[in-house]
Length: 328
Picture 1 (cartoon, one colour):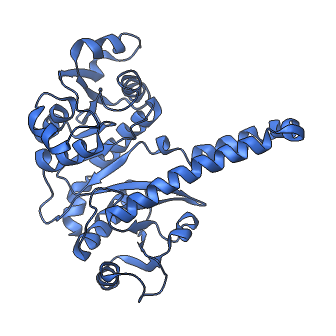
Picture 2 (spheres, helix red, strand yellow; picture 1 turned 180 degrees about the horizontal axis):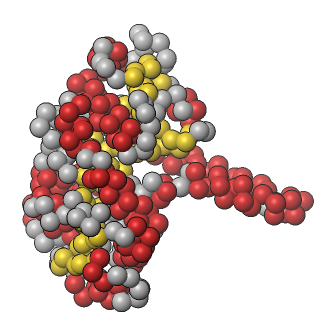
């Protein structure tokens, strides 16, 4: 895809710029990606000098400022016009890049994406999507934190956008849609979930009803919708629980008499860890904008950035924005 360029925030995240630049180089070497690294020219050049890659595949867009996670997102976007986030988003707005990836401030990326790139016509609120691991693969959660307060019409749009994304990017035909709720019965929940249930039930989507949080790991639906408050709570708990379980299992199988048989379990547990690794997906797409913005985890390593870039390329190749417009 020589005509597709992905802008990458070289200064975003805990491991910038070294892991971000390495991820970009890995994407070039593995996928043949075309990338614009956004950040201080000298800093990025210094990192790139460590690697061997096709020099025609990576360009640098100078940006002298960085937005930190403790800054007000709205104020930072307005004041720091030469920040790596604002410059990167403007590359997309001006059609110099097809998508933007950042592991930087979530608030700044979401605020900047909405203000600079803008919403798809008809979309009331863009939303942040996250893949949650399950026993048989994954389920796609929308919204995972962009909109704390929602209307039922927002959640219906979330379900439509997520269904398009999962079908065309993740390859799931006619994905099932579930509504996160405190009970499986239609009558359960608050006013928001009851109203949303009615809208989803009357839609053309493959709606399978309410899904309780305890059933999420058992793949009750390919797509799960909820407001951003509930979604972010589910996401944070899932991240903490998976890390705790892996730690407990590791401690148990390497303790005392289990040390020798544990050697035979190294490969299976590596596979388990891989299934819980957010870097396998790469990042959370911010759906509902005129172009794709992907928010990578703040602690992303090179693998996560590489996979986020690939995710962007698939999104552009499949023309997901147009498909969302058609769905609406």
